[in-house]
Amino acid sequence: MSSEAKLKIGVVAIGRNEGERLERCLKSLLGQVDRVVYVDSGSTDRSIALAKSLGVEVVELDMSQPFTMARGRNVGFAKLVSAFPDLEYVQFIDGDCELVEGWIDSAREELDRHSEAVVVCGRRRERYPDASIYNRLTDMEWDGPVGEVTACGGDAMMRVEAFQAVGGFNGSMIAGEEPELCVRLRYSGGKIIRLPIEMTLHDAAMERFGQWWKRTTRAGHAYVEGAAMHGRGRFGHNVRQARSVLFWGGLVPMAVVVVAILGIAVSEWAWVGAAVLAMGYPVLVWRVYRHRCRHADEAKDAFLYAVFCVLGKLPQAIGVLQYSLNRLLGRRSTLIEYKGPDG
Image (cartoon, rainbow, N blue to C red; front, top):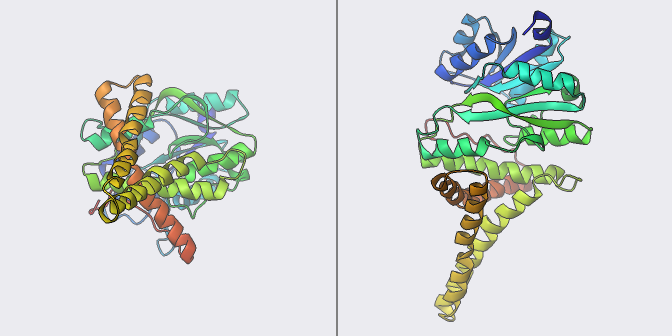
């Protein structure tokens, strides 16, 4: 990349207690860009010292205020553009990710060529997909469609002017802040583009079922909050996902339990009704399995994904309930983390 091109791009990385993952992240950035800001959200390891030793600008987030990844990115962005007001593009990246060599050039070229493009992302992969079934599931989750899409994830390059015009991330959201930002960018006429190339290596570090459960609960929270914010708009943001969670994770289990109770109290024939309702789950597994097979997944991977996709409706429904109760009681939702010591 030429020196002139480098001056157009800055990077915001966020993290907390990422250790070796952060070191890989920052070193991968410094090999491709010069302007990097790292936002630390209360690390107790050597993350801050490590970043400073690499010559990276460090912002220590004020943890007296509720933390969200969205807030961290906004603070990092403000620091970045304050120091370098001539920036045209900003690459956001999570501290547990490593930027693939060549991605910056490819993303910049795409934004240079297409003025209507405001966000460019690529393929995020798991560094250790075979370390656990949960890592494998996450790697499959990242494998989305290419071309013009509706949303990006936490790793993406964005047009600075467009990001500023819509007010950046919604700092109050504990999850789903990237798709929500993309809704506002699309309303303003921008396009979200996913390129068919490698972008980042991610280290989910998920080894336990409890971690997967918490992460999936967070997804349910994100679905319903996004639908509450933009579901009535012309994009119907997250409406289909929220309805699916409410039906399969809430309505059907409740109906099975009620009919089963009737089988005990009223008639044994009610058990037949409960069984018929419950049969909807293997049917749904089959539908997801066939979809993933058409996506060119191996049969065993497609089946694994389908089973956990359907099982995930339950923790997602819990996330919906948590959001709904907090909203009803006027409480602020707190971060749902899956990488902590109790994950």
